[in-house]
Length: 221
Image (tube, rainbow, N blue to C red; front, side, top):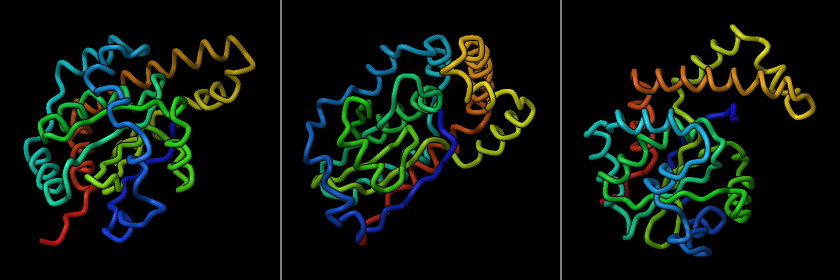
């Protein structure tokens, strides 16, 4: 679960800073799992994800904007997603992110943060502790764009849904020590995911692809 959201336009100065750039040079990009393959092997929420894949299609203008921004950087521009299989925000957004990057001709792979602690630490040092984290990297391995968790517009919808179900957060807090609380929380969380899927299909995916397409700062010509 995650409760914070943001997306960041990284300036050229930040992208060139050794503290923020270069992580991709320390690991084999090809060690990641291709986004399409990852979705096909997902351990959780399979039926929901399959339904979303069937109807997901990014806005062409957002594809063009992402492709245009990426083309201003040294090649190859590549993208990563840090997440975990249990993440509902990933389950709802990966079905649209995969075709977005695919059509923008930017390779996209998925890493589990639990399996790559150096990547998790890279983000934690910048107080980013929510997933999924989408990063775009230039040919030198510098991070040139980042998007975290979910589009801004879905936050109020989720907050309102939880406010109508005050037991949701109580069960979340009790779930590790109480099997019944864990069972009831899992049922409620699945209910939330189904509602989130509706929101994304009804327009929130456009917010996701817009924010992601805007997260890369254009290089001066």
